Length: 419
Image 1 (cartoon, helix red, strand yellow):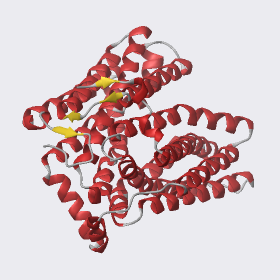
Image 2 (cartoon, one colour):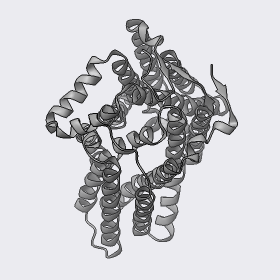
Image 3 (cartoon, helix red, strand yellow):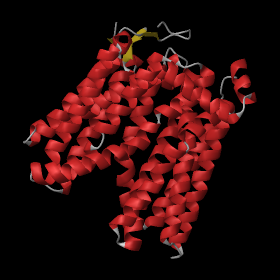
Image 4 (cartoon, one colour):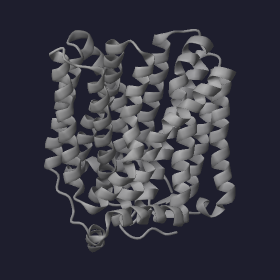
């Protein structure tokens, strides 16, 4: 039975090591969102080209697809804490280099491209290490709570990071934003160094002795062959790839549907952000012994329904309510999905499993492209309605083809989950 307990909402933060990891996550996410804002602004100022602006963004995101699975294998074979420290230090160095080039008026477009690709590569290696460290530290009992609080940190950074970058660019310049990002990664590194991580199991030692490519193949085979993991991956990738492009279509709804401008667009995005933060806190407050497959399915379905409602709304009040619902639902279902994946996967396999899960962030640009093509020919509202119905269809199809998954029961205890 689900029980909402306000006192349980921040339970994971009572752990010193998780608290340090959470602070590092918040600091790192702030730096990454500031980078996304600053890199685009800098490239457009240098070139005035929308094409080069898009290319800079793509080069920042492509490593998540290229190196994600490799990074997961590294996380299973090496010290995850060390992997995180190396990645964060590298990010700080890249930020200092780019900031100094801007300050000295030596920056060229190729500098933005190269540092962006390297920063994306570093992020690809950070993500699986950080996510698997959460379960290493808090165990099964508090994993849902910890992942929800982690999601809250991500969404707070998403709301504050671009605004902070904009202020720094306005008052200091792009170099001010990049020097600040470097400080963020230094702080994250200092917090990470202080963490005490539990010893790895004998199975993890066996993975380290395994040939690298064989360990990658083993991870892919595990995801494909395990029926529950396979369904969770479909639910992680399908709805997000097809549904998240609403972000790129937001200017259409602000300007053409609701007859507003940039302020209205900002208001809608802020409403979604508030929903995401409150949704994360709501999940964090759930204290229960078991999780069930149907809860992930229901969460994905409500994401599709609220997204369809937003696409169909024609007044500000209803659009705001649906936007808030989108923020709540996407965080709630994704947090549960990730929790189940980490509990069902053996500890020595979690890095590879989570790296495949995190590919959803790299696949979103594909959905954005599809959404843009549909919007170009059909208009923004109809395009988003079609994509939200596609999300609904994927979830329903999964439920019909794998009804056993709906009965999946995962125990939130430090023992083997019940299938």
